[in-house]
Image (cartoon, rainbow, N blue to C red; front, side):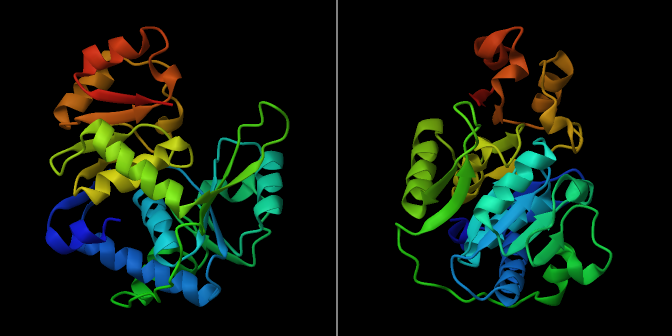
Length: 275
């Protein structure tokens, strides 16, 4: 969904990360390259790709590349226990698994193909960055997928028993993105902070922001793992949002448990989407 923005404004900032700024034109090249690598690892359309990692540029590229390759995304939350993650892997049976280095011990590597995202991999070719370098400037095969085809397998929280895998079709993904663009009034000038895990519901904000040519922010003031530890909202965070010119952000409800959603909106001056 971000390809149109990449074509129209290739020099606009797509992702503002802790160490890297990635513009739309370059983001498309990296997504295409990794999509080619995924298709070489498994040429079957609608095969499944499990991604277990923290919020990082590599994670965002892997998510977009999974869709560009015509594959099914299986989000795996590294906050889950090893037993929970293994159960999800056993149920979804991905043919490719992409892991952050510090997530490697959280899962039993059941997939035949393993790639490493942030800081992992014994060999460069086994990393997301290595695959991007090898397939750079290549274009993935385009499959004629239907709106009813599966875009993702998402697991419930297990509040009524064991977590259950839910097949999400492309129709639901695209409809959700269009609703988010309309309801949040997203536009190309927006800088959207992902202050909750991509593996959680926050993923539905990735494509709407990029579809309108906005900027996704992975701020260095947050740190890699602090996306998972927003148990209170303090003045430092709100000041950082202003300094980083954040217009909107998403977070868990527990993020501002002491003061509530209204306080978060008032203190930050931003539109807040709670999960």
